[in-house]
Image (tube, rainbow, N blue to C red; front, top):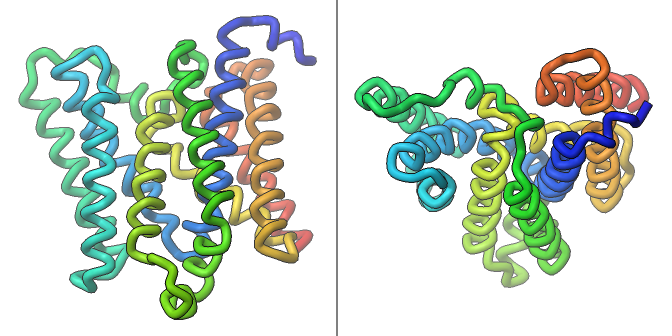
Length: 263
């Protein structure tokens, strides 16, 4: 059953998938339970434009896409916190503008020769060793952020007024959380795809909250479930010859249906 792991490209895909899924699972409760899940979808559109700009100037688009996405996430957080517009509206306005700008740049450029379809759906089977290493570093960075700031983030998620009352720097935490989400999206979007990367953020907390009895259990179940989903999704996609990222999202959805029935 697991003969596919003898292939180097499958080993790289599994390592990257597990690293990204753990990163997403650690971020998921703080976004989903705080009604900020849309930021993942919005950031995927924004990262598309950042990658397009990066591809026009360099063979390493992350050098351009990462600062572009982080600065844009800071802008969204600023608009939300300044009460200029509601969170979902701010995400929608900025992400739609960025996506439109990306398509305009593609249309105006004569040197762009990348497949837009592949960017939309991704291909986790084409990952390189450097991308695996970057994803693992990101995983440890996000884990350290969540574990070190667990209680302030918990207060931020469930009771913003209480968090402010107890001296939690809520604005700084919001900016950091948005920036880390943007970083995760940019690093994962090439292999997972612009249309599917947000599922990695949304599903862990959505599924685990159906059956968990505490926030800590929600976080832990989400992490374990994400790893199982990646392994099972890659196994199915390999043997059934289905697109890997799409299969993983389908497995996430099946787990949600089961958890919803149990819950």
